[in-house]
Length: 169
Image (cartoon, rainbow, N blue to C red):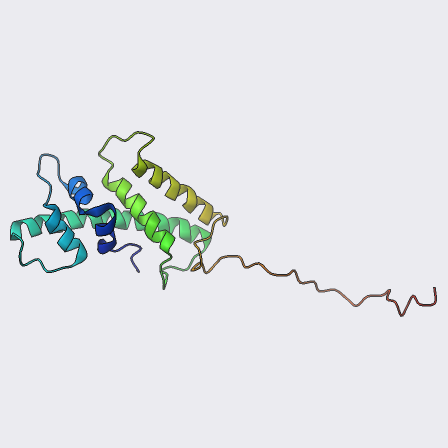
Protein backbone atom coordinates (compact mmCIF):
# COMPACT_ATOMS: atom_id res chain seq x y z
CA UNK A 1 0.00 0.00 0.00
CA UNK A 2 1.30 3.43 -0.90
CA UNK A 3 1.78 5.53 2.21
CA UNK A 4 -0.29 8.69 2.31
CA UNK A 5 2.42 10.49 4.29
CA UNK A 6 6.12 9.79 4.73
CA UNK A 7 8.18 10.31 7.89
CA UNK A 8 10.16 13.09 6.21
CA UNK A 9 6.91 14.96 5.59
CA UNK A 10 6.10 14.67 9.29
CA UNK A 11 9.53 16.10 10.08
CA UNK A 12 8.49 19.19 8.14
CA UNK A 13 5.07 19.51 9.74
CA UNK A 14 4.29 19.13 12.64
CA UNK A 15 8.04 18.79 13.21
CA UNK A 16 10.31 16.66 15.33
CA UNK A 17 9.92 18.82 18.45
CA UNK A 18 6.18 18.22 18.66
CA UNK A 19 6.49 14.56 17.74
CA UNK A 20 9.15 14.02 20.40
CA UNK A 21 6.82 15.47 23.04
CA UNK A 22 3.71 13.49 22.10
CA UNK A 23 5.45 10.14 21.70
CA UNK A 24 7.14 10.25 25.12
CA UNK A 25 5.76 7.81 27.67
CA UNK A 26 4.38 9.26 30.88
CA UNK A 27 7.24 9.77 33.33
CA UNK A 28 9.94 9.52 30.67
CA UNK A 29 12.01 12.22 29.05
CA UNK A 30 11.18 12.76 25.39
CA UNK A 31 13.64 11.72 22.73
CA UNK A 32 16.13 14.37 21.66
CA UNK A 33 14.54 16.44 18.91
CA UNK A 34 17.67 16.38 16.72
CA UNK A 35 17.89 12.57 16.91
CA UNK A 36 14.22 12.14 16.04
CA UNK A 37 14.54 14.62 13.17
CA UNK A 38 17.48 12.71 11.67
CA UNK A 39 15.67 9.38 11.94
CA UNK A 40 12.46 10.83 10.44
CA UNK A 41 14.38 12.19 7.47
CA UNK A 42 16.35 8.94 7.02
CA UNK A 43 19.69 10.69 7.40
CA UNK A 44 22.99 9.42 8.83
CA UNK A 45 22.79 8.71 12.58
CA UNK A 46 26.46 7.89 13.30
CA UNK A 47 27.05 11.20 15.14
CA UNK A 48 24.28 10.51 17.67
CA UNK A 49 24.23 8.57 20.91
CA UNK A 50 22.92 5.03 20.19
CA UNK A 51 20.61 5.32 23.21
CA UNK A 52 18.95 8.41 21.68
CA UNK A 53 18.61 6.66 18.31
CA UNK A 54 16.93 3.70 20.04
CA UNK A 55 14.52 6.12 21.74
CA UNK A 56 13.89 7.76 18.36
CA UNK A 57 13.09 4.38 16.82
CA UNK A 58 10.57 3.71 19.60
CA UNK A 59 9.01 7.12 18.91
CA UNK A 60 8.91 6.32 15.18
CA UNK A 61 7.04 3.11 15.98
CA UNK A 62 4.37 5.10 17.85
CA UNK A 63 4.17 7.60 14.99
CA UNK A 64 3.82 4.78 12.45
CA UNK A 65 0.96 3.28 14.47
CA UNK A 66 -0.89 6.61 14.45
CA UNK A 67 -0.27 7.05 10.72
CA UNK A 68 -1.43 3.49 9.96
CA UNK A 69 -4.59 4.02 12.01
CA UNK A 70 -5.25 7.28 10.16
CA UNK A 71 -4.75 5.58 6.79
CA UNK A 72 -7.14 2.77 7.77
CA UNK A 73 -9.79 5.32 8.70
CA UNK A 74 -9.30 7.21 5.45
CA UNK A 75 -9.42 4.00 3.41
CA UNK A 76 -12.76 3.15 5.00
CA UNK A 77 -14.26 6.35 3.63
CA UNK A 78 -12.59 5.91 0.24
CA UNK A 79 -13.83 2.34 -0.13
CA UNK A 80 -17.33 3.50 0.70
CA UNK A 81 -17.08 5.85 -2.28
CA UNK A 82 -15.78 3.06 -4.53
CA UNK A 83 -12.13 3.98 -4.98
CA UNK A 84 -9.76 1.23 -6.07
CA UNK A 85 -6.99 1.13 -3.49
CA UNK A 86 -4.04 1.52 -3.31
CA UNK A 87 -3.62 4.64 -5.40
CA UNK A 88 -0.81 4.74 -7.94
CA UNK A 89 -0.36 8.43 -7.17
CA UNK A 90 -1.50 9.59 -3.76
CA UNK A 91 -3.65 12.72 -3.98
CA UNK A 92 -2.17 15.57 -1.94
CA UNK A 93 -5.38 15.94 0.08
CA UNK A 94 -4.84 12.46 1.52
CA UNK A 95 -1.44 13.55 2.83
CA UNK A 96 -3.00 16.58 4.53
CA UNK A 97 -5.82 14.51 6.05
CA UNK A 98 -3.48 11.73 7.19
CA UNK A 99 -1.26 14.30 8.91
CA UNK A 100 -4.26 15.88 10.67
CA UNK A 101 -5.74 12.57 11.84
CA UNK A 102 -2.41 11.04 12.93
CA UNK A 103 -1.53 14.23 14.78
CA UNK A 104 -4.86 14.06 16.60
CA UNK A 105 -4.27 10.41 17.50
CA UNK A 106 -0.83 11.24 18.87
CA UNK A 107 -2.29 14.07 20.99
CA UNK A 108 -5.22 12.08 22.39
CA UNK A 109 -3.81 11.98 25.91
CA UNK A 110 -3.85 15.78 26.04
CA UNK A 111 -6.85 17.82 27.07
CA UNK A 112 -7.89 20.00 24.14
CA UNK A 113 -10.51 22.67 23.87
CA UNK A 114 -12.76 23.31 20.91
CA UNK A 115 -10.41 26.04 19.62
CA UNK A 116 -7.44 23.69 19.34
CA UNK A 117 -6.00 23.63 15.79
CA UNK A 118 -5.30 19.92 16.19
CA UNK A 119 -8.95 19.16 16.98
CA UNK A 120 -10.16 21.57 14.28
CA UNK A 121 -7.98 19.94 11.59
CA UNK A 122 -9.11 16.47 12.68
CA UNK A 123 -12.80 17.40 12.52
CA UNK A 124 -12.32 19.14 9.17
CA UNK A 125 -10.62 16.05 7.75
CA UNK A 126 -13.48 13.83 8.91
CA UNK A 127 -16.11 16.18 7.45
CA UNK A 128 -14.37 16.26 4.10
CA UNK A 129 -13.88 12.49 4.10
CA UNK A 130 -17.60 12.10 4.71
CA UNK A 131 -18.30 14.36 1.73
CA UNK A 132 -15.90 12.29 -0.40
CA UNK A 133 -17.70 9.09 0.65
CA UNK A 134 -21.02 10.68 -0.35
CA UNK A 135 -19.61 11.79 -3.71
CA UNK A 136 -20.00 15.49 -2.90
CA UNK A 137 -16.28 16.34 -2.72
CA UNK A 138 -13.42 15.47 -5.06
CA UNK A 139 -9.88 14.50 -4.17
CA UNK A 140 -8.64 17.00 -6.75
CA UNK A 141 -6.93 16.59 -10.08
CA UNK A 142 -5.77 13.07 -9.21
CA UNK A 143 -9.35 11.97 -8.51
CA UNK A 144 -10.16 8.97 -10.70
CA UNK A 145 -13.87 9.03 -9.85
CA UNK A 146 -14.45 12.75 -10.29
CA UNK A 147 -17.44 13.71 -12.35
CA UNK A 148 -16.50 15.35 -15.62
CA UNK A 149 -18.70 18.11 -16.96
CA UNK A 150 -19.85 17.85 -20.53
CA UNK A 151 -22.77 18.34 -22.83
CA UNK A 152 -25.87 16.24 -22.39
CA UNK A 153 -26.42 13.67 -25.09
CA UNK A 154 -29.83 12.72 -26.37
CA UNK A 155 -30.80 9.63 -28.30
CA UNK A 156 -34.17 9.99 -30.02
CA UNK A 157 -35.90 8.85 -33.24
CA UNK A 158 -35.80 11.24 -36.20
CA UNK A 159 -38.20 14.20 -36.16
CA UNK A 160 -41.65 13.63 -37.61
CA UNK A 161 -42.48 17.29 -38.17
CA UNK A 162 -39.80 19.15 -40.07
CA UNK A 163 -39.80 22.16 -42.41
CA UNK A 164 -40.07 19.77 -45.33
CA UNK A 165 -43.10 17.85 -44.01
CA UNK A 166 -44.90 21.02 -42.93
CA UNK A 167 -44.15 23.18 -46.00
CA UNK A 168 -47.65 22.70 -47.48
CA UNK A 169 -49.42 23.85 -44.31
